[in-house]
Image (cartoon, rainbow, N blue to C red):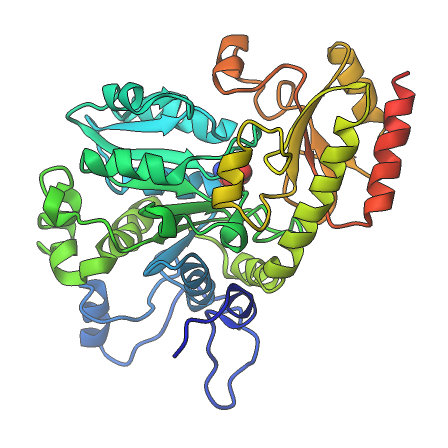
Length: 427
Ligand SMILES: *Cc1c(COP(=O)(O)O)cnc(C)c1O
């Protein structure tokens, strides 16, 4: 069968009902599943048979939604998590252990920056942050014998930098490690990083995929392409027998899905950041219209970016869709249909000016959220990134005056009217 379009997968991917079954994916709100005999259950526990026995490991509702996202990204399998933070932690921890090292773009979400820079080191996993503008030589100079992965965000939150996915993938592969890409802001509607050489994709599904601010969630997609066996010494967890599964070896038993199966069978079993079936259902509702919402987010954001850029009270605007943006060439390449609805800008004046502007907005709400159908705004230096020092802020590419505006899918005239009156209010 011909490969279905992203639009069709958004609407119909994942749940495939049989005759007389519910058209919409059912919410299987059950912790457990019943079996007729002990042997059948034992074989499930030994991963010899596929099936459900406890929702911490797998649940039919969540699996149907994961299958839709795997298809959207063009991967072989996916696993939902209870948050985007959990997704990025699992994605790294599935191939790292105490003594491992990763290399990450420094243009990433504040929560991930903390996870890599502060929390992972407590587990003995170190991270070197590199600028996406660093040369190949500079990035390769950060590689160590114990480096196990490269990491970056397709479009960074909040800086809106665009990752040169192909270059990062080439560098990662040249030293025998995979590239993990957080594709939250672009979504597979605007970019499919696996097609550019990335190996593993993560998302905070809390954002555009959900799109309506109803559930916090995450997902990891296994591209099924990285050759773990060829780098077996680096990835003993995948290529050597797992003592917690009677000596089963993931790459031998599960082939292309080795990474994905280990995520579920080992990490989810032991760490348990499972989404609720109800939340997976809500995520699926969001996904059904992702292909319709993304173009509108992009169109509105471009109009807002142009409006702000033309206003003399605005000091700067960062949006990859603008022709004079430093990442515009990368955006044209990786995001030809549009980037996302998020943009950043700074106002002329001081910190107070930013606060007065934000407090004057009426339609656009102040919210610790982005990528929602409703327009919202945030000041990272005083909200999401307030744990970071001035120096770390600068390292993470966040100017103290940076206002992050997530443009929703309301009528563009109403959004612009609100921005105009708030600009007038700062005098
Ligand atoms: C929000 C976000 C996360 C964290 O996701 P949660 O669902 O809030 O845990 C990770 N990466 C990016 C790019 C994000 O925007």
